[in-house]
Length: 268
Length: 243
Image (cartoon, rainbow over all chains, first blue to last red):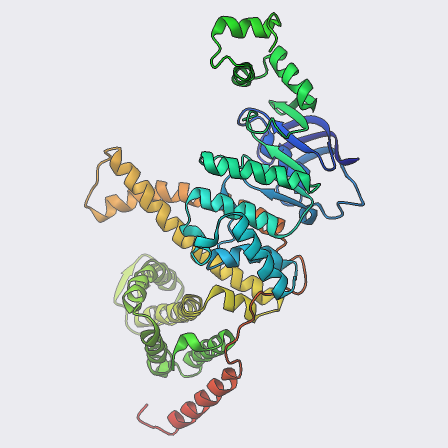
């Protein structure tokens, strides 16, 4: 079932003449995990904001086209869709004394009962490995702890659609593994996951669909299997291509092999 | 009595009463406002040094007001100094000090409240959405000042590592700060936009009534006791001619 459908959406930020997104049309299906992949500055985050429904009410800019949400699931996009920002500092409320309070913030805003808030905060703190910093000031945490805090704060209010914008930037190998397990679990629970990242290889085990952006345009939208093939032949990203090839068992691809791949002479 | 132990509403009432009294009895300002507040601060935290240092921030504000009053307030008798339309007279100085006092007192009241009350307690005590909004605004302003100061320190440090010349002249350093302040201001504005987004996504002000995981357990009736004590003190002072 289509959860969010974008029809020819174009976005131009206020004060800019160039469109950040150009006539984007794509569909996010309920219960599926979607990876939106592009190089930096090609419109991933803007597309995340569009899905979240914050244009043009919270971010000033010109928007053309339409967004259709599944009315049975999403009535208020801002409330029903959670988004984790790229920079965890942006996620902190800055009005809370402790990590505990920060996690409780979203529950308090939605008027949950005190017992329910305490239960959720404790559960999420354990899940996100934040128990040891629960009474520390959020600003004093390390970047990876802040990232886990922002993921935890997102999960404290149980939403069915989650958007993660480059969630593993500050994570070490152990934390990356933890995050991938977490997303897999969320997917098993039937939640819709949207990941915005330029690293494809982290998610290939559980991603269903891929949307590839280039300079604000959708260059591919479809399943992951077709996506691999598309990216390999269109050489959308040489970096991605190299990684795809390395998955075939060859650790490093030289230029000659890469060119063969682009021409379609060699299939992985 | 520990200032921390009071209910946030009691603290707010106490501080605003003292602030109001400084207007009703201007000559008693030192007695009814400064001393009790400093006394309360001394009882809780040894932050007097910080407060006195922060008073230096008032100096540019004082200078600006003096300039405006020197132009706008006409001298009646004595003129100490004159330059074109600017006149330094007892009237302009008096007007400047009165205006500075009113603003500084209010900032002092709010800073005292915010520094000596847990954020959770303060936000949990007030259910009215506009008061909560004002409190959040107060916290965000304090954070912005803190963040801007830290950014300034970082930028200065980066400049030093890039072997920029460090002048010991106050004016040179002030000149060097202006371009830094512009970039910091720009950064703060971008961050505030992002924060607005974050608040909206986390449901801030979405419901009319917020909940809290732990209601403030402090003695709320203290508000009545505090007002009563203040009234007694006031009535006592009213009879003292030496004040």
